[in-house]
Image (cartoon, rainbow, N blue to C red; front, side):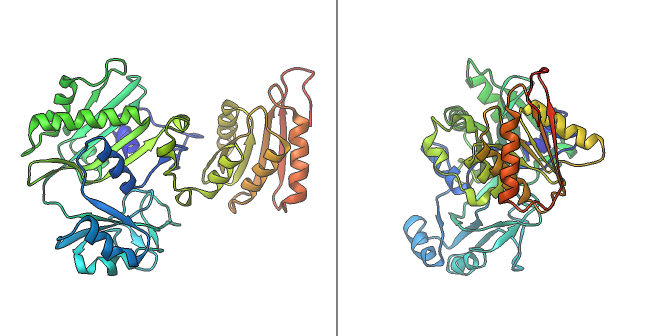
Length: 394
């Protein structure tokens, strides 16, 4: 959603092989209920709620966490946006419902274990293994708030809008003047002036201005201390009791910070991720699945990108980005082939190795062993980019 907004605002977008790719990047993404719990630890206002995995837990969870509620919000938990307008493969419509408390169990039963398809999941959808039961809050105004890392300013950028709860891309296209952007000096951090500029852009109707400024500062503090790459709240809402509340949130975290964010990265739900990317991560391979028909195994990120561009230039489409690095073992090459051949769309595999940083005989042995273990049903083309006349050849 944020990337779509930036494209409409004229910011540089990520392209692979000359085409925008709707793909999951290797940045940790956590569920809404996990994000709400994390924000609560930083003093950010969030609705009371609890996640459940079985129908038998619904009634007790509501009674323990949000008792005396006439209505509750039942939210399917998948790592994708557009849940409210999504459709389950069992025919049930909507991944977010406000219902009477005594109906919560029935609605949860139509979600748990079912596959939800949204505009961000693709046609295959994602399975719902948890539902989030939240208090129904009396909202008087909905706004949009996000923090991202911006290349143009080389630091965090806060994007806000006085309207929210709907597609921010559509708002940006129809009402571009309503979108405000406040860059934050990464060395100085957020100032009262910065936070006030954000709050003035949000234009809250009933929430206390000073309290709202403090909420913005707390959000920025969490963004930095938790090594977030994106924090998006849509809607950031005002309640009838004059509070600013993060009614829904999407958080991404930098995988490079996993060593110091162990508690956060323990929240990873691999069942929501591309199984090929999960397998690649376990084999210590850099892999991102795409939607083409030519599988690529390359060493070096630059060569991998150039290889995909060449495929596109000649009328093909890459099925993946796969960088085996400069120290790959035969075992890793075998695992790479298993991942490539698990994609039913792959019609051919291109191996392009730079001999200057990788022993080509290791790659060759890996390919031979992979052919013995995996039933190769597609052609394999292997290339070698030499560093010098002494480079080893296939």
